Image (cartoon, rainbow, N blue to C red; front, side, top):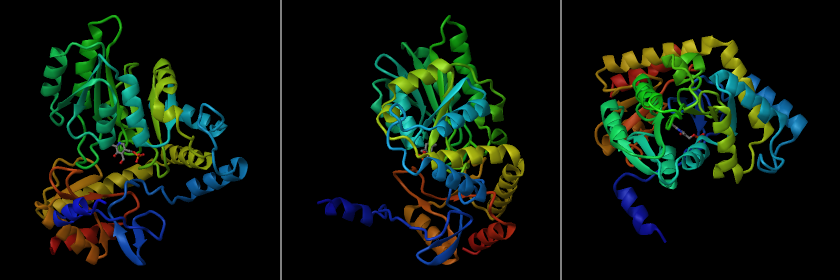
Length: 383
Ligand SMILES: Cc1ncc(COP(=O)(O)O)c(C=O)c1O
């Protein structure tokens, strides 16, 4: 039925394949029986296969069984869900928090809930696809501002008349590894809100790649020393540095209550099983107790980034463990990724439409050894 379209994708080298692991997630993985050093996961702290998460999950399964059986608003939630929400609120220094089934469900659900007809969204051009889809699903007008360009954002925002204005940005951009200028964005929103009795400019931050990574793991606001104002909504995921699954939104009590009452992806979806929630609780406790993991992540990131730059690779504006290696054409990107694969290194080619400029996206984690990183550098050095 779609053979023509598939042929077109194959001819353009844009067709995708799924690689299935037969090992746990980690710095070393097995795919189709072959072992690779893995530079492609978002398991930044190496927690996806951590004994503390597995233990917590097994204990929760013994107590609560496996499935959750219903949505949160029916009987799908457990006391573990409530405990995790309280922990997230404390972690993020907000009044309240709510769990979502995934980051994708959070963004595509919350954005249409908070931005309706008569409102205007201002979205960074490199925001994640789930934000793009959330904006499309909302009935708000959406302006796309140039990547990290706060003058462009300020111009757009000042000349727009709207009931409510919502600035939406990733804090760490998932394919580029650079960080949003949140201090400047915060100041723009603050100035607009200060001139009014009731704030009408919201700042919605996607901390998917900042949670567990920036600000001692607490995310981008902590990193920049920004106070979590009631008009700031922080979304984040448990599925990346926290090694688990699912997402959260944190904010003021009334914002979270409003989201709980109006977000379709929350209301009309089965709750996450307690064993997953228990793993997220264990992960949060671990990163609070073991800051050494985050230190190791950053040491590894710096070693890889410095090494790649020294070899003459363009790592774009990367400032985080997400390190894009610019490889020119789609063909060259595929060639580089396949070459690395032959050398026992798993690092995927990222192509349009995911990004405009093809690249090999390297993600460094706390679980990598010096030897792993040296092997990556050696392979790319002899390409
Ligand atoms: C910035 C960003 N937001 C949201 C998501 C979606 O999160 P999840 O994988 O939990 O659906 C991702 C994951 O790829 C992401 O990179």
